Image (cartoon, one colour):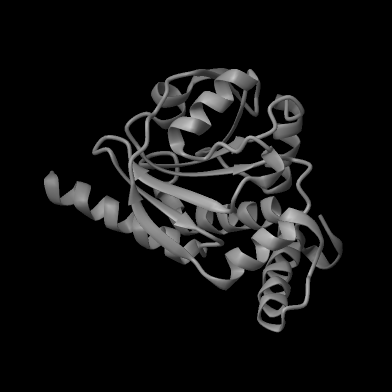
Amino acid sequence: MAKGGKTVRTVIRSVSRAIVAMALVATILAIPAASGVEADQAGAGAKEVRSGTVQVRLHDAPLLDQDGRKVRFATDALGERIVVVDTFFTSCGLICPILSAVFADLQDLLGSHLDREVRLVSITVDPLTDIPPRLKKYADQWEARPGWRFLTGEKKEVDHVLAGLGLYSADFTEHPPAFLVGDVREGTWTRFYGFATPEQLMGKVRELLEKRKAKT
């Protein structure tokens, strides 16, 4: 616990929101908020969030979760749930904490839907470094609950999964800020480009839940 009763996640979430705000201001004023590719992507993501329907391929590759358990990506990690997917790496200093802060808030909004009907899936883009113990520490930092899974594995398998999702980057440090929201059972997918808010993602999840309910 942090001072004043705040959890580590709460503190980091506040910092991440501040980074988004600074990136947006920097974009508007044309003043760099940070250096390198991450700063450019943060500025672009904070400036505009776009979404669109996409086609993906779900490769049922063997991966590992944050507890070191062997899982098949499509069969075990996703199942036939509604899922929200992002990418990250644990040593990332700017983009990834913002994406993870969004997921931390989203899991709160999901309530009882989390894990039962909806799953959050974070896939590392740096599997050579992000072995399960590192993922476990990262997940604990964000107070991830059952239903939010962190995945790694052999690089070729992780890259294969990411390529199928349209989230692969040859240089993992240049991975874009993006979220995928989809209904695995129906095969419908939407990609959000930029730093979508938890509320925006929850809106799409609710839409998919309602469509499922209408068919029962």
